[in-house]
Length: 231
Image (cartoon, rainbow, N blue to C red; front, side, top):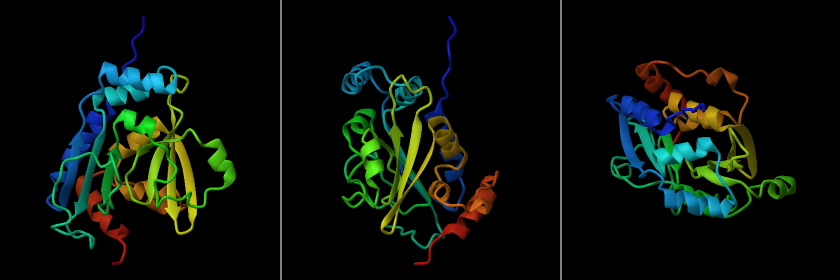
């Protein structure tokens, strides 16, 4: 029998984060790693969704059942010493906080994902999604609540989906934009960009000149300055 080794995304993402926050200009605001998903928790989730989960999803939550972090550059105009004091809790659980850091990942515990509807997360409205989208995407479940105006959802995560689709949903004024990529691509991109929020925003645009990610930590940290809003 052939055994497939699934990627250790959470471990790689945290190792990447540790590399970034060792830079003197980066402040770690939050870091939470949930305990591995238990057999009992997995059985409850499988009962709720009506069958086994995608192996890649099960493997991720077996590594940690919930994962969040937030980091910010010291020179970011939004950085505030008091507001960005370090805390350790899962940003993806409960009510969403305003996340203003340069980078953030906010993945709830698996059962919380299954139980929570994607509708009403942003300002309690449907943010201009058309009726077709609302009707055909009723099965979306929030996965990464990395911003107070954008998040990602699973579009199907049972065993029928070998590499589930991640749907990025972002509110921009009175409209909503949607982009779709695979779970594998999404996780690899999070790892490569340290959970940089701007990289996910760029997926909603055609600004291809800004898609290149600097390889060195120093170059990456310096590139952050180009993306800060005026405050």
